[in-house]
Length: 328
Image 1 (cartoon, one colour):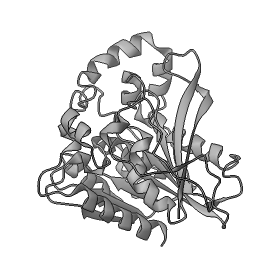
Image 2: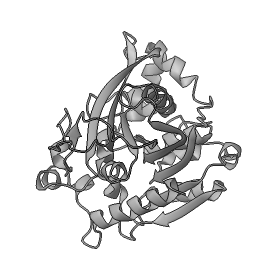
Image 3: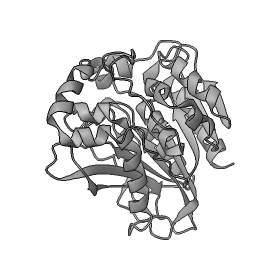
């Protein structure tokens, strides 16, 4: 089956952008089964280093295939990544009848300048996903074609934290608050903690968001979730909220990933969860797309795996797990 692709932007008028001068932007990218006869071409390049990663052909803005309801999978990216990087999973699921939509989280994606607020306030991200679902159900390209009883979520790294919040986890402490002792910031923003006092003093938008840290972002429409190397922020969840989650969840992580303890912490508290190490020597970035030579030269940390790890083989394992989980 040919795979269609389209993209769009939502303006969330209920929340301001981090500058406080307009609505919060939410960019999205959708892969879906395309109508018969659709012509596939290279994936459009957007303002981020797409050329670092391999991508299969898509039929740009093609009509949806004409047969029945489609399950929906929403994807939340990792810290400093973007929604296009689910392409390797999205194309395979779309070819099997799924609509898969990746999202860019404002201030925390590499298609726009990073903002400390976007890294500090991870609890804004699940609201992005819920609004995206609200937007897609009546969208002209998909209206009447999404099976509202089969909505699933995939999250990578901080996206795994996002999806856990959507399942009902409650954040009771920030990993970057004083005394949290989980580091000064990710590699994309190594001095992140230094920005917290300034933002508290100068930004009303930030203070309003910080006050929402422990709100519930549970979205009961999500019926199963795949978490790929969920981030350290999961250890800021209350144990009680995680134990109350009653949604089938599969956690997958590399055996050499520094976040492996966080993934185990979460899985031990989720009563309906499976857990897999995808490869003993795999690191954190094995869930990004396979890399081009340009990517391997430009950013070996995220594009080059140990010789013992076949990123494509890991992806095939994840695809099989996703199909099993979402077609159960």
